[in-house]
Amino acid sequence: MKKIGKVYLNLMDHVNTIIGYLLALSLFFTTMITFWQVVSRFIGSSLSWSEELTRFLMIFMIMLGAAIAHRKNKLISVEIVVEQLKGWMKEVSFYLMHLFSIVFFIVLIVYGMNLASNFTNQIAPGTGISMKYIYMSLPIGGGLMLLNSLASLIEHWMKGDETSC
Image 1 (tube, rainbow, N blue to C red):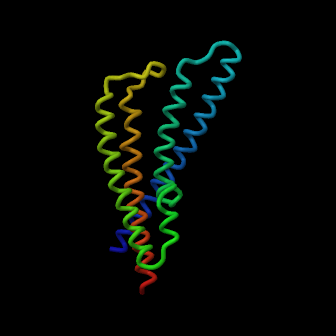
Image 2 (spheres, helix red, strand yellow):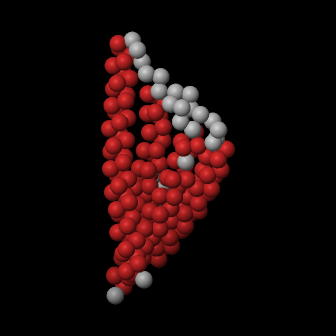
Image 3 (tube, rainbow, N blue to C red):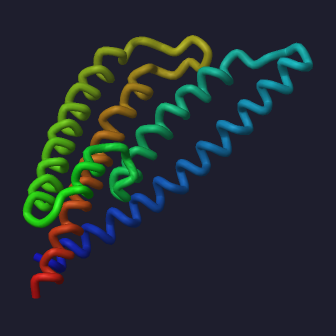
């Protein structure tokens, strides 16, 4: 069982590394597009699609970044309460926090899929992108947060096994 846990953690670390590179690339493109928009406005011929595209990139960056932050326990959460507790109360609250998070991520995935399917025919005016793809950020981000939450639980469980030996 531990071997499967290690393989899963290794896989999620690789996925998070790839997501980190995608986030860096998205941030670079967002910066370049915004810079070009400022320059083009100064010249007098602004781009019609730049603001919309940067907004869409920011939405995806937030969802993907939240997934990585959740894995590293950097999200604002009940973590403050968990850190103040001792012994078995700390363990129970840790697992409850992750259980509630997992339920929330499942809701985010389900409702995100519903939203994406409802907006299949709506097209963003500036970029011509189907809004379905923008709303897909919810189930994609929710799915990655769910997978990272499971990774945190497995990692915590494996560390607990090491200390009890």
